[in-house]
Length: 89
Image (cartoon, rainbow, N blue to C red; front, side, top):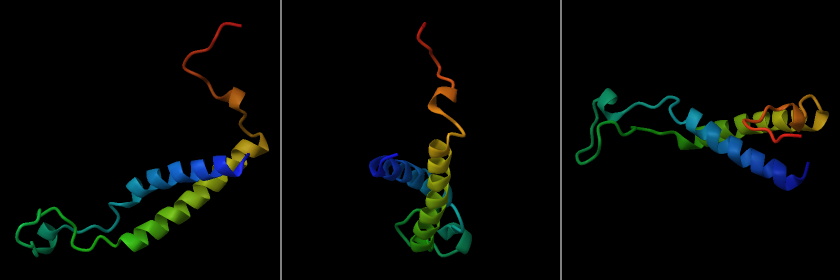
């Protein structure tokens, strides 16, 4: 597997993980009773983005390592994955 393929897999897994991690620990301005005038009450008070980026990177690293291991070890071959359509042979 090439380095470019691994980087592409990591990039896709990282963005997918980010959307899963973003809601962690978010408190809205309405929940904390500290709504800044002119902002949406659902806006987060402290988004803690640095921690979320670090958590996302670690999760993506583990998931990508698992995907690369499965693909290179031969546990699952590309031929084993069912396709929605198959050409007649």
